[in-house]
Length: 96
Image (cartoon, rainbow, N blue to C red):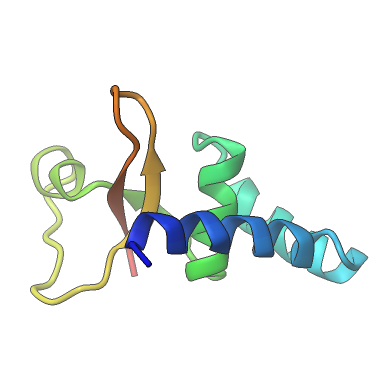
């Protein structure tokens, strides 16, 4: 399977698991409240991969605008980028 298909499966499974109980929904809402600028699907993917994420941005944003450097070897959070003609993955990094 490709990584894109793995991420698609992850978002579908996580949407079901988040809505399975009020406690899981509240945990998701805590993450979503910190990442309110992201779409619902991006928030679900961030919560699925890093439930305690506090501030996420792409590598260029951290380096150029925020003047903070992402450590070498840091694992990104995969999001689906469907803005172009093809769907592909883009990665964001959490501040921690």
